[in-house]
Length: 117
Image 1 (tube, helix red, strand yellow):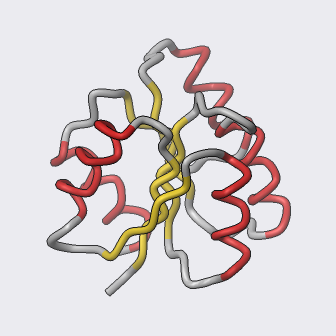
Image 2 (tube, helix red, strand yellow):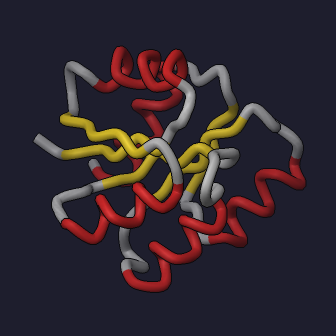
Image 3 (cartoon, one colour):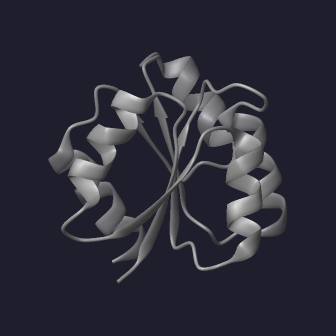
């Protein structure tokens, strides 16, 4: 079973993501960008769902650092800011795709499937 890293500081958003992922994927949690980088470096992560706004290190900075070392690891930005400029910033940081919160379970699983089969 493939493993998804959910980088999300908000407990209720994390619980929603686990509900979406639980039948098809294993998952781990990072509460900030720094933790996300540490967990990716340990290995075994197939895809990252990256919240954009997090404490300590935001998701865009973490994405850029992860992509510098692991360019083939798919990262999907998760953000409540659904503006085109936010999408563009996420893609420029290295995200492969972008999902707006609140995340639709169906759309989330479709996006993951498209990226990691």
